[in-house]
Length: 133
Image 1 (spheres, helix red, strand yellow):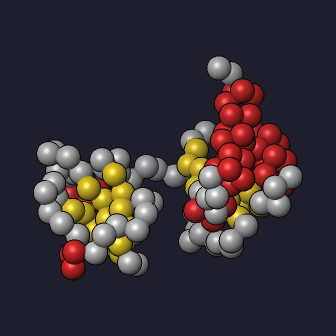
Image 2 (cartoon, helix red, strand yellow):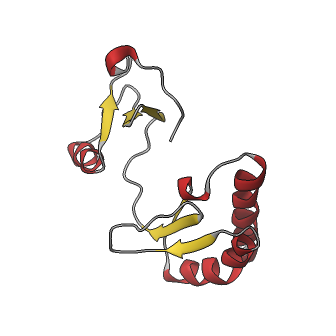
Image 3 (cartoon, helix red, strand yellow):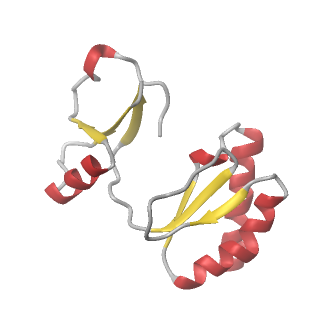
């Protein structure tokens, strides 16, 4: 698959998430690396999103600005890859497997307000998770 096909696939997948699956654009974030990817997102994916009434907002090196019809893209790092993410009430959780994440990852998650659940530990208060992040 070449980069043009990848951009088309990303745009089509975002369209499917928004139109067919009912995901709000503000709940989608594209994380990319490489300076040429930004240009491709702007020229190839943004027009597909505009046809849905969705703005592609590429934001880097600042706190994110959000609105309901804005899909965010940023050049960032993937902070952690837990087994899964949960949300209960306003709290966000990450659950890892048997191998605990490094201290740096734990600190970054804390910076983002994400709590780590150990394997076998229930959510505080027994609240059932509402939806995955």
